Length: 511
Image (cartoon, rainbow, N blue to C red; front, side, top):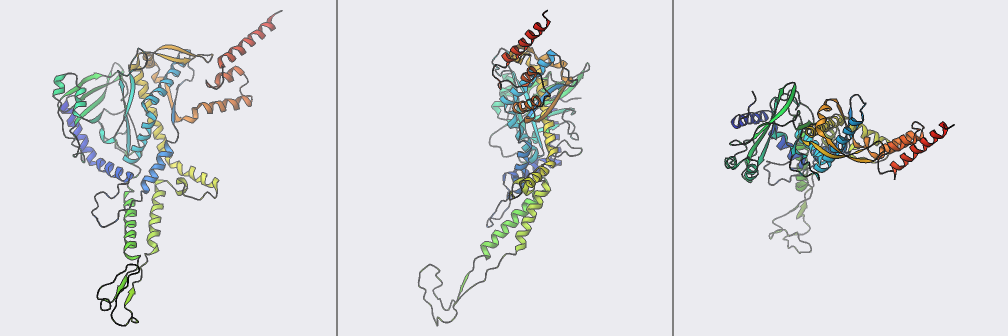
């Protein structure tokens, strides 16, 4: 039985907090965030000790993130049978245009980079999508799909031993809002008056600058008549903001990725978990080396107190009075104690081993002399191979997000005016009913990859090569394959070629 009352929902919420505490998620996230940002001496009580930070982990993570999201991703939608008719082809083109529009207007690509960053540092990254019915679209139909990055400490699952979101019995997203913001979500004034600030209840979240309210949004699936529908409710601990209702969706509006999946756990493992002791050792040893340099690297003057009753004055050019025979040794200089070279060698080895264990060599990071360019490129490519698992996980996350967008278009878009390209290459307007996507959702194949695979420039180069090699011999096919904007009066050229062929065919048929 799915819990829907506020008291029951918050009981589940507290059980989720207890589970995250048992697996150490809160402490892991806090520590990993500090070490990634360079706050690596938190809680150390050593006021007289310099606290240097040699952020090896942050340097390697920056390389990881840049490698995975160096290219913008794109989604290509097609049918499994590969043979769309005219209506299906229009639908595929319209859907692809809407994907690009949502990602551009909502800044989804920038949020994707933050998702990968959260996965690398915290272990997981989640993206929550919802439909804003009041968003203007420039036409009569209103509403737009929007997204928000959610921390893994704010996502709760019905089955904590499964990492697949869509197979969960229920999922919940928790937000800490200001009281006024929470009251604006209330359906009436009586409900708004019942909303009061509350405590967070999570470890390390006691020191909040302002009073806040915990808002819990829960989704669950109900199967009726052979169809699965997603239901939703939203509440605070004292008020129901949204009674249970049918969202019209078939998929949870939540997509996520883990950096390294953990068996029998809904949360993944971060890239720097387990290597923080290495970073602490590097910082400590460097701090000791700096302390040794301050104490032992500079010689000290030792003088005879009997010879200098007024003390020693080390200022430049100042005369110093002395008693007794100046030929006697009245001063001496202590010898400097050199630091063993093995210390710096050990530091270098620890840094090198840590980078190697994380999969980032000096060649990959660019810390080598470019004597042999080909060898350096080969090593860099080989170094990026271990990240292919994370790259594939990121592509799967983007594919899940695209399928959520597709589900929301079907449920909420209705009929909208869109543009499509006809057979002659011209752009035409069309009133498209997005509810028709319900019949196509199960037949759609979504491929995700670097956007260069489907970029216009890459397409032009490929078509040029095919035409030059004689694989494409029809000028009309060549022109139709060129993206719009590269050839002026493209539709006119295609029409002229077709008209010329029709005229030649008529002349050959004439007696």
